[in-house]
Image 1 (cartoon, rainbow, N blue to C red):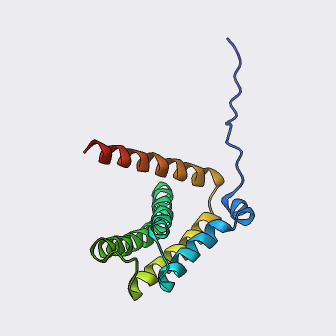
Image 2 (tube, helix red, strand yellow):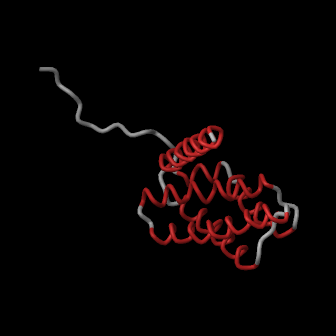
Image 3 (tube, rainbow, N blue to C red):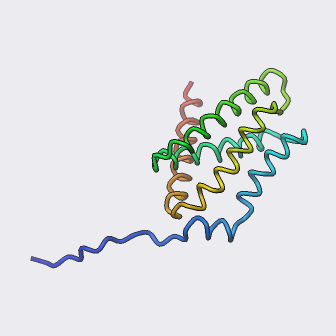
Length: 143
């Protein structure tokens, strides 16, 4: 019988805190997206960036069973859906004061959450989000 190594092999990824330090534009983009909404120069790409940030955070928080972060994601989800409905009606991107507060909270919690997580969780959440978006796009195209 052949001997086998019982040691577990883990992916070698930098902790998310290190990745964020090396790529600060991730957090800056999210904060600038909220500022774009405040300034009135936001676009649908701005909205999509915030939606992706919220969805990735929700996937990762679900994996970690972090109820407080999931709650923040749900609050931000309501704000984003309200903004989407308003955009569909008026063709203008904007938010109310409460929606801005929810998005500010989302950006703050997102930054703090990711700083405490292993790099693999971020990579996994990003892959899951891409898969989900691809499936949704395929489902829409089949209609």
